[in-house]
Every structure is written in C-alpha cells, then in structure tokens.
Length: 152
Image (tube, rainbow, N blue to C red; front, side):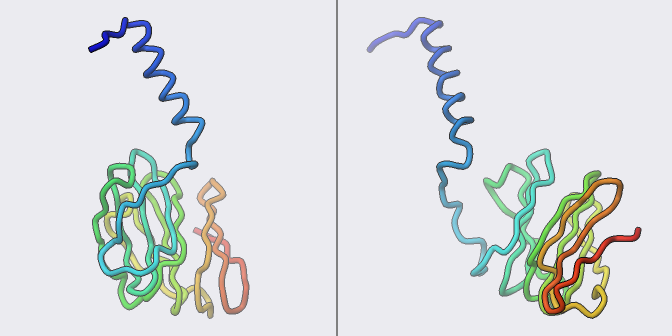
C-alpha cells in the first residue's frame, strides 16, 4: 500500500474538484423515471438545493430538496395535463405554466403547495415563463403566440 503525503493528497482533491467544475454539464447520469410520467417538460432551480420538475401526460409537479438526487411527487395540479414551464421569482415564489387550459399556478413556499391563478386571457397554453425582477414576470403563450406581463 502506498501512502501519500498531505501535500499530494490535497493537490489530488483540489485537482479533482477543479476538473468537476470545468466539466459542469458535460457528463450526465440517469436518476430514473419519475413515477409513470413519460415526459419531463420543464425544470427550475429555486436555490438551496430545491428544484422543480413539471411533467407532460399527467400534469404533475415533482420537487427535490437535495439538488435533484431524489424527488417527491406533489401530484396533479387540478385537471391540467401538462406543466410546460416553471420559473422562480425569488423569496420562495415560483410559477408554473400549463398546457390545455393556459393556466398559471403560483407557489409561495418554494414549490411545496400551489394555488391556481386561473386561465390567462384566452390562451391555450403557457409555454414559457421568465422573471425580470422587481416583481415582473413574463409568460409566452401557444395558440395565439402572445407575451403576457404580470401586473401584480
């Protein structure tokens, strides 16, 4: 058995960390299928290790509190069949945009629970969400191809 001096071991550890940072996003591993969901449509990172995943098919939201290592099924959001977009606004507030009924859901507790804000205008889907800061969010829609802007 070969013993390493502390200097070499420290260099090896820092060398490996440096390579991992330089390769961020380069290598991937499967975490497996989430329940019976066939499609993960959207992902969002909320900070502090909390991540959200929105699905197609059953319209569920999954939540992770350990940097995506494990996931909790939060269930179907009312009668929605697709969670197409997710956005984090800060302060624990997240938004989820849906297909079929064009609704936006809002969470104020880092994605643990959700409130249905209803259908947004006459849109059929909320394809994308973005937070601009200062309490302003944008939503990109399907069907009529509109951009919506939050007013409160």
